[in-house]
Image (tube, rainbow, N blue to C red):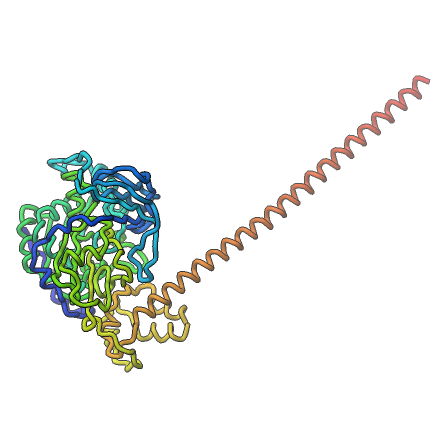
Length: 506
């Protein structure tokens, strides 16, 4: 199998990112364990990008593991399946992963302890399935991007033919501190991941796989290389450990030298990126017929007694996972869903694990390290750290002055909100919060402008309709008047003719 080597010049030119302390151990050194079942599973209908799923079960109904309980809600959506057998006890609001502990509609399922599956359709050789069959089964299985983006995978597969994709990038970088779920998955299930990647390759029509794995995961790299050895189209590439290496555009640039457009898709330049967890889920769905009902989650942080990686059913509350890891040894200063850099702060431990949950972290006070921000010293550290070459300090200054349009002009839309700039800032300026606020405000203004434009269009359309109706009425009135005048003239002429005829007869 040929080896893909990253050119030294490409390494030198990419002096971006930061190197936060990893904190991946002890969890990274332990085998994945099954988390078991809590007393209640709460399954939000929106666990993916796009329209929420539509409930197709009723309260009181008994369901089996893998049974469809909510169907797709639109072109960009994903179905939802029961993570175990049990009874639907409610379809009601439940807390969801959100910084403000917002609630959303969820299916509440009480497990019966039997974990009884629906009949599954296995395929001994799923690679023999057609491209359409692969895509359809991925959609039916409810698979979404497992790296956190949660974009419906079947929709992404369809981009392969529309954009003539040639390269599939398998994202095994896992650059976030603390997280090691992908690392353990690659070590323990490398064969399944490679087979899943080959299935994605066939579905998209691409010709090669580049699996990028950071060099701080030697065991995973070795396992993946052994699994990929029989397949010359699959290449395992060791990449530098750096945050945010896992961002799509950074990974594409590192592995291929191609720069993906900021205002377009990676598929536009012939590349698709899928997480290793997604490839694993695709393999399980096509080989064994299993829909997505569970995922591997890293449970870690200084407040956790025994950090580890657990195989967790969707809908499991975070409090249950901490109990499975020996409980919390100290009160956490911050609880995070995902990684500490781009994850979501959690206020309520009843928050459930969803398809995009890669980690559940309980960070101790010393790990949070919050302190008051001070004035910018213009050191430029944030500029060096930015993975997309922006000027965070200049954008922040414009946002602070409420010149959001100017911030947008110098690259706000290109910002990944990865947090690298704020992490490296010696003044501890909350740069990412500035950018998130600005993006949210601009999005709000955009929606408001769109609403005003719609109102304007409707008003203009109404005025045009009224004018058209008035013109049509005037035309009808004129036509009828002309018809009446012609009729009157004709009648008068006929009357005159009759009169003349009478005179002649007389």
